[in-house]
Image (tube, rainbow, N blue to C red; front, top):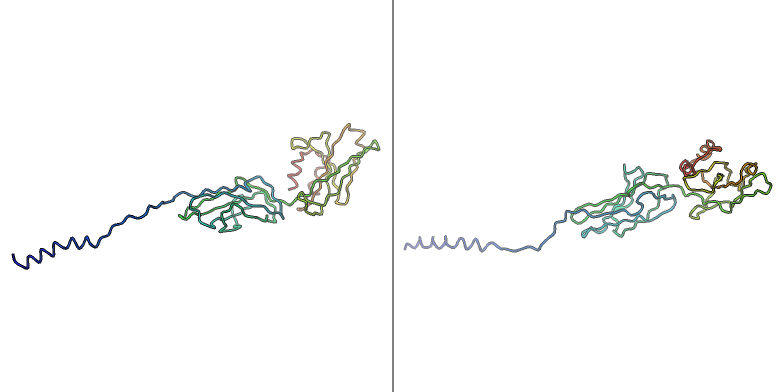
Length: 253
């Protein structure tokens, strides 16, 4: 055999072996591709609540996913039913609570929105189911309301002055509204008549001549703070007008 042919054969025969010697094989660990968005639920405020300027409460939520990133909670607030949102805080810890100092502007169309992201980039979010209100903190209800009929002609209504809000904070009220009815019902299905309003220094009102015309009478006294400067304008249209108490409250908002 020609020696050159033999060497050529050996070289050709060894080429496949050298190629295979350069190839390594291995199996990677198993991995999970997550395409599911995190679950986010806004618990509070979730719609229908009355919140009061000057107070605070915890926004609460539930956010779950096995791979939620740390400090990935973003909290937003809208006062126009979700048309626009302002951020309250970002990169919050997912502990389900955020203390919120309520805005100082009255609004009836507020929503909270919360979103979060997991380590695969999936985003979950939720908003309040319905709007909630932010209102001025109202005065407490007058107590010790008393009706004196001793002169057999007039009903003299008196009460204790109010100087605190419904939460016990000090307030300088603007006056009192006196309403009356011939029944004791107070729910929104029944009615009161507007009788009068007084300034904040007066805690008595005389309903003249009522004893001669009514067998029984019930009175409601309401303290008010005229934050919007509209109470007198509203009441001037209600003299002896039959109106639902709930409707009167609505007009004062």
